[in-house]
Image 1: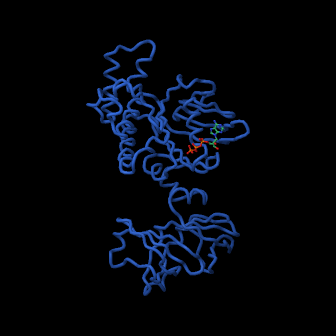
Image 2 (image 1 turned 30 degrees about the horizontal axis):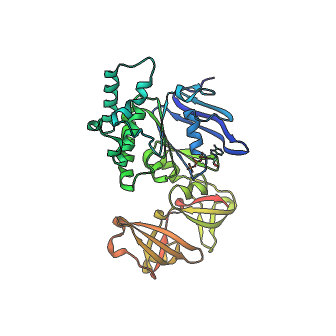
Image 3 (image 1 turned 45 degrees about the horizontal axis):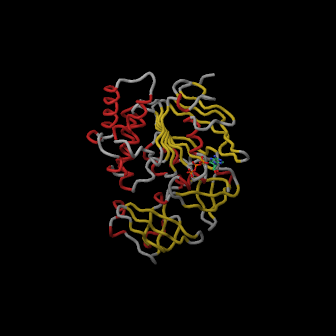
Length: 362
Ligand code: ATP
């Protein structure tokens, strides 16, 4: 049986059990050819298990994994058009950079001519901007450079799909951000399908075309980064992908209005009709604007500033909202202006568009 050939990878009703432990179940998703997909979720949710089933290091207990339309049941890892980059790059310390990159090509049968092997290794090193480093020893390379050697080794035989298991986790924040941009650029240039496993939501949002959010062995939402962030399908997604305020509420008037626990009432967001009853509302910290005391009368909620964290380009406030407790509010410096910085102890109003409320059943 084949799947639509425009998808490089497809999972149909896939489950994986280890003895009595169900690692993942009911996994269904597709990655279009040449796309960048991130598998995102907390530790133990099953991301690596899914990646390893694509690579052929694990076999599904149920269901089928397809690569380029072909069912992969029983197909060994080395026969799949797939390569993998690991968190710990697993480079050979006794070989130089070029030998590390060309290692796989040297094992191929029928043999590839050694001039051709050198040419391809050189090309892969240039792709990752390590053109002049072929003769260096691995221990003479920095962490970021070693990561690039691992990448060059993984792309040297032009796989159809590249699997990346937390490839940037060992790098410091600045280098990680730089490598995120490089990886994205490389993926666009090569046109190879990338599947990235990460528990870092910023990494998933910034690099991928699609994010597959997982929790407790299941997929909870799949979509483009902006859709995941702007229209989270559940409170879990709202919390895990970005920061959010949770507000206890009741939906009444047949779904037309939302009553916060402190008695404040809002119209339900125009785009949804939430079901009546107890609800939990999510509201992004940056969707709230703060009004100083004088202007507070027009605001939806009122409260007192308890903490201010200066982050350079933005400021994070903790606000004790009257009748609702702690809220997080993020204010962009540009929008704010220095004269508008409020201080702990200040009384403020909180204004927001009711359409920014995400309402979920409690
Ligand atoms: P992390 O981010 O911590 O690597 P993950 O999301 O990649 O986590 P997996 O490694 O896929 O999660 O593990 C999913 C679940 O399956 C976990 O509960 C884990 O303990 C279990 N599991 C994974 N491999 C095995 C194994 N070989 N034997 C038994 N249980 C396993």
